[in-house]
Image (cartoon, rainbow, N blue to C red):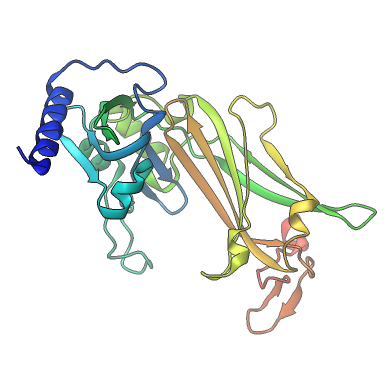
Length: 313
């Protein structure tokens, strides 16, 4: 048998063993350093996707099998990559809208997969990871996909304060949510629970940790866009807030537009994120200047400033 035939025979036998044989994986992920499957929802944009990660050692081939033991993804390293081998593989499915836009919405015409359709498409259960290493050794692992989807963080806020020395520090705060934003409001959730589509109310899904991202919202290609501030805190934290130190903020130019993203990460890694944009970092005109064309007060970033008199009303 030639070299190609040997490789094909090893690969075929290994996959047969994976699909037909018993699973012998142990923590953390069998023979892999890490592997996971998860659902990620953006509750603000209203989209949903399937993500998976496989982290091995010097792999030349990798594959993922669904709970029905059908292969849904595979790769094989070729040429230079086959000489260097692969370690970590992270992939995201497309993330279609989970809501139906109206004809006058900007998103009208984009692909739509509702949350119910998404759950019907993907099967909850054990997903099996498979790899072949540099010396043709076999790696196996498994992770469980659930539809315990944590509720979307709510009431995201940004506050910036300047101390006596002129240093500016910021604070990001939020509240625990009760729904899945654009993907499912309270009424939708009640219906999904009643029909047995969702196994648990999102508000009752335990949050293992909160992930907080402050990201400059600039044009593509602007190096400032890569200067993100990311922090995680435990899911049971008493105060849902994080500080953003002046050491970070002072590295950014004046009037830097930004957005905040807070994610509720469940124990099984399912994640629901909420975004807020039109944040102005190092704002040189926080009180705003009247703009006749916009007929509004605009701050240093050109975002509308709420009139305090209107708030009092």
